[in-house]
Image: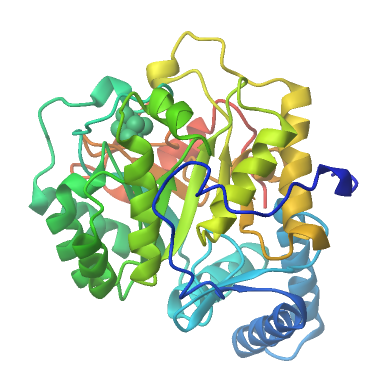
Length: 411
Ligand code: SF4
């Protein structure tokens, strides 16, 4: 972890004007909780965890030892500091993109499963908590880094019943969060609405979109169906740079409008940035953070480019100095008082280096547009098929294979 360097502070003015885009309403702008309110939420959350633990394990010394290990796990993954920011959505709060909001049954399921891994109890095990599910091969873009490139714009394999059957299996496996991707999943918005209406009481629904077809009307429909939030691919604060990366003259405006419409519908918004070698400077990262902060975004997800899909065979892997830049910015925006009201930064690469791979059937998996079950969006060797095979058999095979880049997490 780096020391906080205030000299990197850039002016917090809206870049929306300089990019000549539609400005975003700030009606719902107070959804990041900081300061004493964040500390208060932290105390409430801890008391809730204590209550869950006492109900499950009883008032014993071993219960408190288990709780200590639970907090150690969080620190290994997210860093030494306590939670300083929360994202509020409706009546739930969350401190990361990959945990369901609190209070909710889904949040309790995750907490109990994490306790269960430390101290096995009579609680029903929920070995998989999270899935990415790519529901369509169709996409109007040709992004430089697309990891689904080899499947893109081929004949669709999964019809609605297949999608439903797969989500049903995921529900039976106990997942608490489903991130729907593609291709461009908004091309199947009607199917998403139907799935969400049926399953959103069991799991949080999120949509990964480049913004295509994310109209105001669709945002309202998705919100009404129960979608928690969207994760918008936005790779630059500069319109033409983003459009070049995505090879579409409309990509930037679509992404910005999706953010605007989702916020107007009171959905949580995350943006995901593929931090390429050419983008990776502190100045660019802070300008990007300042820009999306002005758009009322709640999370910034930093992705390291991988040589798969459209990037296969290319020299895109970032070096240790560039990783250090990402780590510094991740840390500073999350913990420096200078960036108190900025979005929460999520950096899976850092979590994986700290804690090992939490995907590959450890806690998460990826189902692609053929229904094949993969370790994650970047590892493209299937361990089975979600329609044809028993999901837990596939998960067990996947766990044996592990992850190609990181050691399996022992947490
Ligand atoms: S990265 Fe996403 S938006 Fe871009 S081409 Fe691939 S599927 Fe389409």
